[in-house]
Image 1: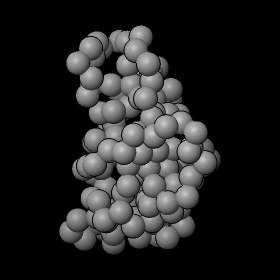
Image 2: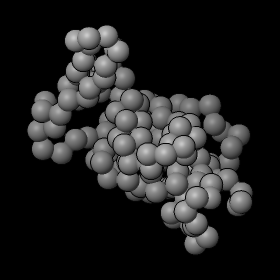
Image 3: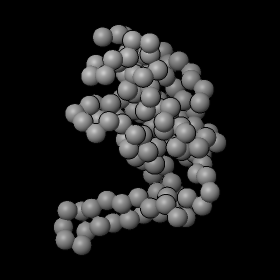
Image 4: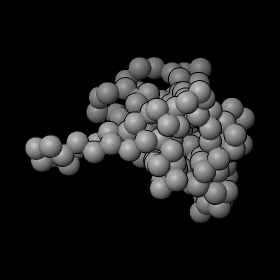
Length: 133
């Protein structure tokens, strides 16, 4: 198992889907030459400025995020615009989680993702490598 690196990505004026694919690739470890399916080769990713990501087309008004309370009739939905106003890091987390493999690794990989709405974050000590998307 290789040494885990920490990457920082500035999400200012980036498209959500394209940003999420790059993040998912790093979390899984497919960007490394020694990638092997089934091995834990992924790195940590810190995303800043999630408040200023953009959606293409009319997705802000037409895209819905769903969740269920677990009770009958408990389906709740929220427009992308409302979720961006309430909790913008959650938009990126949901996009990345949907691109991760649906197996026992998914929770472990998504725990390596840190998303912050502004450029202030507590990860100065991790020697972050800047990554351009």
